[in-house]
Image (cartoon, rainbow over all chains, first blue to last red; front, side):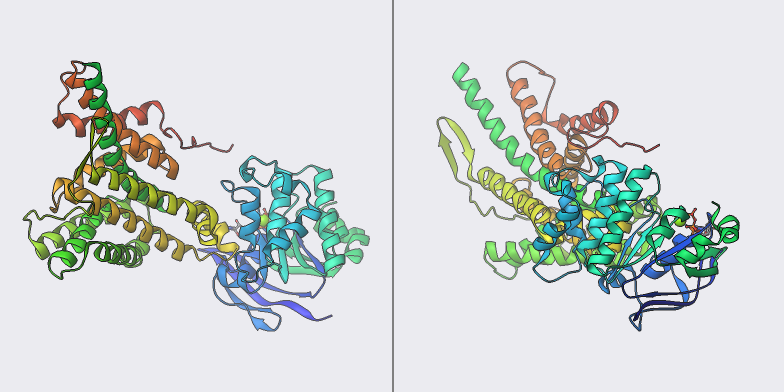
Length: 235
Length: 304
Ligand SMILES: Nc1ncnc2c1ncn2[C@@H]1O[C@H](COP(=O)(O)OP(=O)(O)OP(=O)(O)O)[C@@H](O)[C@H]1O
Ligand SMILES: [Mg+2]
């Protein structure tokens, strides 16, 4: 498979706090890759480095081309980032949130895509006029996913989608992600605290430890190795 | 007697709506900037004055027709608003709210000084595009300028509303104002949108200035009082609600005229024209105390 995203020696800091020291990872086209690690390991910062919301050093390539510029340019290059806490536009309606997802697109098939999204999330059509801020947490997470899909991303970045959601909603969320991956070949890099569910949903995984990659392997390898599970994944 | 009172009443309503329309435009400008920067643009009135002077200069010194001058002034003001954002607001945008406030106050002083330096403080006459005709509608005397003002103000408000509601750039403007971080993630150039907001605010101010000058006379301080009424309108309607600003503007215009009307008929007979401005301040204070989010604003909900 072709390499879609490549991080090589990425480092990032917030003022005096060195959040990433040396992160290198690869995501191939059509893969679901998980990034795991304890609180403060640098998972969110890794995604922020990719989407350009934090300044970084080191190389990040999308499809062989260096990802440069601010978040707007990187969004336009085909990276959709669903941030920690979902980043819904709470004052805007469901439909407006979805339309904003397609902001970088110039083609005219946005309407067709709204219908395509509705196949995954039928309630979004009926409740298109509802203010996003009044949706439940699970619905907002689904909306954030739907909005990201509206951009027809080459790469989808998900930051802790399970945060604050009931187990059933989390399973439903990852079921949809897997379905998108299988049916449409969507490439996903997902950050999760909940290693168990992330390993089930992904093909490969990286484990971060204080700003660098501590280990990597296929998801089934990591899941099957009890000592790794105990010492790194905490279950 | 009753019929006379009714025509007086209607007359006050019409002229209240006309001045209210102007307050609404300026209040809308304040709201647009407040939503995106979190501050009140104290220079909004002077920006409007400058626009009115530009229109006057085009007509008086360069013998342009009224409407071409009107259109050109809108374009100049729009571009100027974007320029002000780029040159003086953007550099301090990331700082504290206080810094932006101080910059807008500096801007107020600077524009006022510029106007006096360029055109002297002498009052000038900017004509009304609607002429000085008055119509008699069933005994109610209405000035063509008032009708024109109401029409133009409503027209601009509707156009702007359509821009915000139905266009892609309008959606991006709203998203950028309230959730700048998330807006950048979906590819919206937030700083352009903020600049565009300043451009629109300057354009609204230009219309307000050009409509105010014919009645109060064009002079460097002509918008000072109007700005206070616009503050009152924006606060009354809800400082973050564009529709609230419009409703608030019309309400303030009509409300103040109602006081004049009632004082003619023995009620509130202490009320004189000199008390209009203090009354507006009283309204600001009362709204802030009783209902800080105004009529149509949403109360600030803190998430726990
Ligand atoms: N805005 C910030 N300012 C200062 N330090 C920060 C900031 N954001 C993150 N950090 C620090 O950078 C390090 C990495 O944070 P990051 O958010 O990437 O961790 P994480 O793996 O996503 O953690 P969590 O699982 O808790 O979300 C932490 O030490 C954190 O305290
Ligand atoms: Mg995180």
